[in-house]
Structures are given as structure tokens and as C-alpha cells.
Length: 114
Image 1: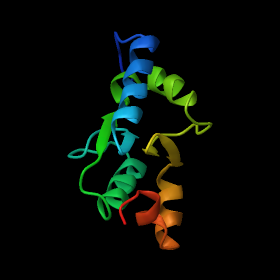
Image 2: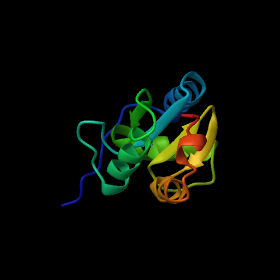
Image 3: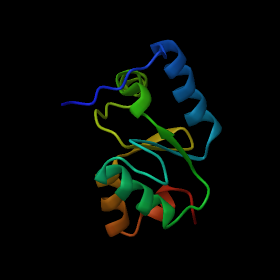
């Protein structure tokens, strides 16, 4: 059995939410699940990496309207997967990019945490 989220949100409504979240927050993570219950390992890893350097950041659970969020996020990045991290309105990457930046000691600077 496959879980398919049902959403009554239309693409335009989700597009507006995405645009506002990116514009209104210094750091925003679009993820599967939430801070208390990440719903995939990649989202959990991204939360942990960001949380090492920034205490205040926004998270957006994309699962209630996954397809609509994917479409809206495609307008901001060419990244096809979730999670996606944005800092000061700019796309940074997913959990793998965050991990690479962390390994190189560049994640704090990329998150403007320094």
C-alpha cells in the first residue's frame, strides 16, 4: 500500500507559501515532516546539520501537498529532491550539500551563522 497525500491546496496557494517562506526567513528548510518528527532520513540529517549552527530557522512540511511543493520549489532551484535549504532567499542545497559544507568547515558561513 502506498501513501498518497491528498491536498486541497492548489499550486498557486503553495507557490505563494513557498515564496513567502523564502522571503521572510533568514534560513528555511523545506522538508518531509517537521522538527519533532522528520519523515525521512535526509530531512532529519538536514535538521541536525542546520541546528548545529543556527537555533532559529523555519521549517516547512511539504508532505501535505508534495507535488504542489515540488512544482513551486522548482521555480527557485533546479533541485528535484526534498529537503531543500534556502538562506537569505538563495538556494543552498539538500542534506548532501549541507553535509559536504559541514565537512569542509563552511556550513556555518553558508548559513550566515558566523
